[in-house]
Length: 377
Image (cartoon, rainbow, N blue to C red; front, side, top):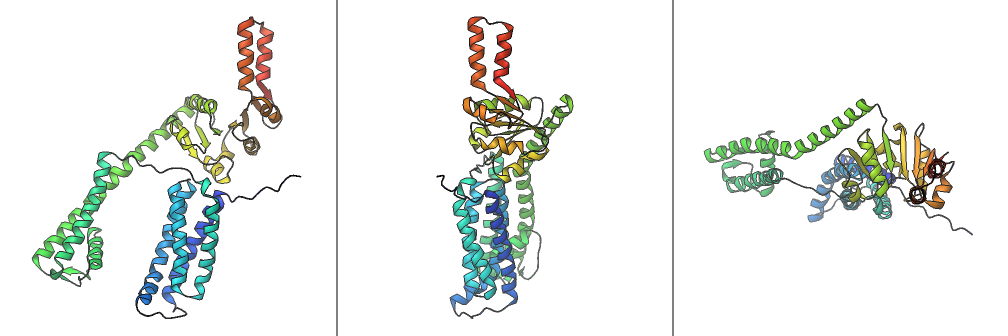
């Protein structure tokens, strides 16, 4: 008797749950500002309650950013989402309002779903920063520290600036050139300091944005240009490769010379070894989210590494109008006959080619070798 298959939530479900918690946190935070709590706290608890009304909305927006990273398969985004969902539940408790109950329930459910989907998010977010990019980060942190330390030291020369929080507020508002004017300098030294922040702040941010995002944009445009050129010159179609092993990696490299190729696999390290012309997508090839990212339904051919996951063949076959080529050995190859358009058995190819070369077989033997290696469905 077969045991029932255990249900495992998909990565797509986890992303949707995180988005739901984010929206609930934002809505609850806004409603908390407009309504009174069921129980008014006193002392430090009152301060926590007041802060939770505003910070809950911030947590919600942070969760939306984490959900975006999870959609791309980043593990760090998954970890951040788990922490933020827990914070959302804590905010719901701290706000102490009946309208916070849905947020608490959603957050608890979200933690359960996230605990069951950790294996779905394996993409690392390693940052390889150049010396210019690292210097930009240091410059931003340095200007911020300079502003806070300077403003707090010169606080006697400012109106409405007394605490470190006031100094942080003044630094951010001035360096971003917003300038509300509620905190303003009253002495010459304070005015000169404020002018230095107005000059340093926007300049540092502009240089940092250019150095951090410029190379990434240039790389993306170059890769897109290569694909468009290849597509136009050869008149070939877009190909999706599901699963990666030695053979499918070599196939993807060869195809990328003549057409646009997207390969989806869970092995991020292996995908990094492929040329830039191959567009790698990290994720389980059988997940709906991964298939959406590779846009499987619009491709013209699918190459499947069936030995990695036999279910890939059925997934690829569901792509309307796509020609499906499966690479499989032995019994797996025989099982796939009729389920895909072409089945290629590399082991059979190697055996027949070796036999032909050794015995000097005739042309008929070579033809039978080719027919044994490739079966049309």
